[in-house]
Length: 126
Image (cartoon, rainbow, N blue to C red):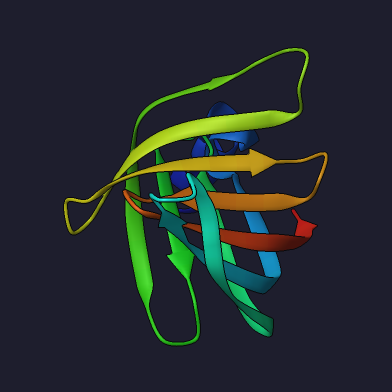
């Protein structure tokens, strides 16, 4: 048994075993105002904490809060070289479609729904 574990540790690259975790502190939720053509009616919670876990190959996101956990499956993604934002088109475990933006420069995670946006402030990335 020890030989099998040692062989796996030697032959499987460590990058395959890793994931990216983003802890967030602070949360803003805004609704889309079709009349004004912008997001408004924002609600803030500076004490809100959550964690995003992204698989090493960026095909699955887990979003964990104190009251729930959701899984999102990445359908497609891209990152433009000139801006520090990664975009992910995802489907939730409940079948809903969202767009995730990870804005490393401004230290934000944004989730765009059909008529709202959720914005989380990144505390740490590891």
